[in-house]
Image (cartoon, rainbow, N blue to C red; front, side, top):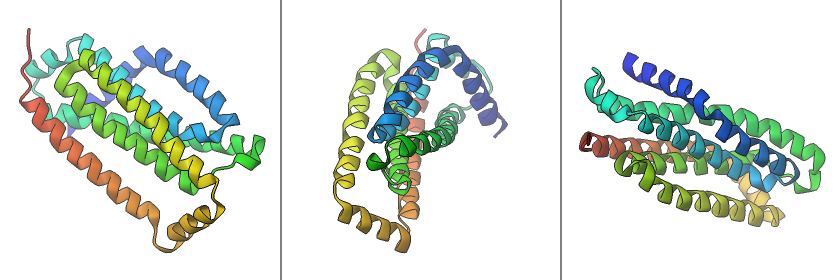
Length: 216
C-alpha cells in the first residue's frame, strides 16, 4: 500500500512539470463553459484525460518503465497508482465544475443544466475516458496512444454534449429524470456502473502491463 501511495505522490509531483499545458486548456474551456454550460461535461472529461495522458507521457519519456522494473515495486501497484491519480484529479475537477456551474447559472439562467444531471453524466464520461486511456497507453505507449486519445477526445466532446443538449430541450424528460433521481437513486446506479468500469479497466491494465516487454 505504501508503494501505491508513494507512486501516486510521485505522479502528482510530476504533474507540476506539465501543468502549463493542462491549465491553458482548462482556462479556455472554463471561459467557454461559463457562457455555455453544455461544455461543462467536455471540460470534465478532457481535464481527466489530459491530466492522465500528460503525466504518463512525462513519466514514459523519463523511463518510468525501466524504473519500475528495477525498483522493489510490483507492476500492479504502479497500475493502481494511475487510477488513484485519475480519481484524485476527478475529485478536484468536481469542485471546479461545481463553481463554474454556479457562475454559469448566474450569467445564463435560461441555459441552466441541473447539476444533478450534469454531474452523473460528466463523471461517467470522465471515468470512461480514464478506464480506456490507461490500458491503451500502458499497452501501446505514448506515441501510438496519441491516436487513441484523439478518438476518445472526439467521443467525449460529442456524446455527452448531444445527450445533455437533447435533455435540456425536453422539460418533460428533465422532470422524468429528476423523478428517477429522487425516487430510485440514479447517483447510486451511476456509482455502481462507474465502479464496475474502473474495476474492469484495472484488471485489464494489470494483465496488459504484467505481460508488457520492457525494451532497452
